[in-house]
Structures are given as structure tokens and as C-alpha cells.
Length: 71
Image: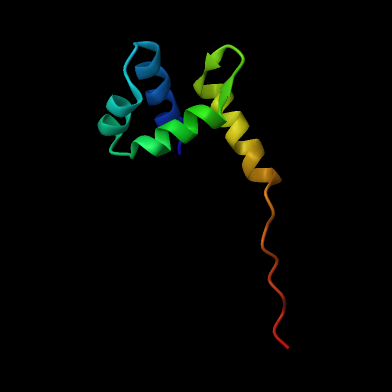
């Protein structure tokens, strides 16, 4: 998910729209929006900047596949 998409979620969420409406307006599944909100919501709610930072941290911490050289 891009920073622009997270900002779109933030604006619609702040205006009180449902997850289903947000998902339909973005052409995404409802479960994608639900995961985004549950993974990247802080103590004071969902903020697009904080969500992007959390997502970047999660991406950097995940295990990376290391290619082995051919024999």
C-alpha cells in the first residue's frame, strides 16, 4: 500500500465512512483495509504518516530470502 492510499484511508476514516465504503472506493477488498487499520493504528487512532512509518519498519524487520550461489 502506498502513502497516498494510506492518506485516502485516513481522510475517509476521519469523515466517518465504513471500511466497506473505503475498500469499494479504492478498488480493494474489505479485508485489505481491515488489515491495514488493525496493523497500523496507534494509540490515538489511524494516522497515515504513522501507518507508513510502521509499515516501513515491519518491512525492514521481516526475513529476507538469501540467494545461494550455484554450485
